[in-house]
Image (cartoon, rainbow, N blue to C red; front, side, top):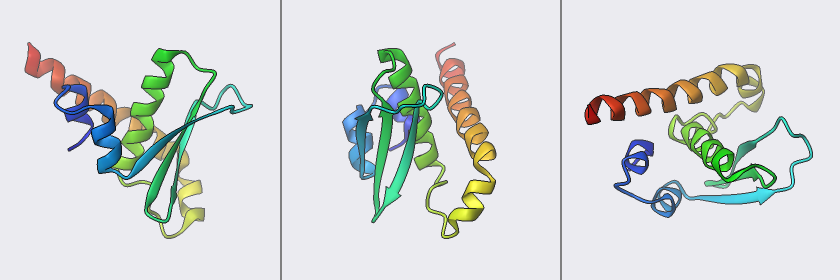
Length: 109
């Protein structure tokens, strides 16, 4: 069970959230440049999405945050090390989603 299955509509959003032990929280995030983020606490993922985003941007942000989970980027024992590499993790999550979409497109062609 993964993002590819979600994008292929083999599973639904709730299936993937349950699989990852994740919950979505729509929050009033005061910084417009922050669309969302993920927090990992006691084996649960909390995906915070800026509630002021459009429907499309919420969905896109959710995919991005799920990519962080799928890439296992949040289970770092050293949070300081994570902070030093945040831009790399952001790029990796974006590339991962792009790769999945390209694989699906090739499959459908």
